[in-house]
Length: 129
Figure (cartoon, rainbow, N blue to C red):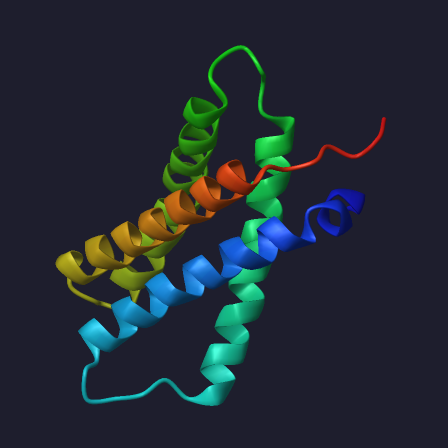
């Protein structure tokens, strides 16, 4: 996990981007409520870890095409391969309406795309071999 230390700045900025998107989504969905502090702390930790994993995927992505294609493509593949199935199953199991599950899934797509874009723009450093 040495790549996290090498890329702490882009990962932290990507985390902040994800947090801002999430806060906007939360305040749009729940305009009368403010998120509690424990929720914000847990969200920040989760967003940081998600950015760490995405950074690893971007560093390991094949170099056979444009780096931006790989960054956006990696975010979409992680989203459709992991986030969508888990959210849809969990939210539908709890009997949340389908449109809510779709909106939550799209929120996470926007977060992943923003994080991938921030890290691609700032640049990531592969750890020494």
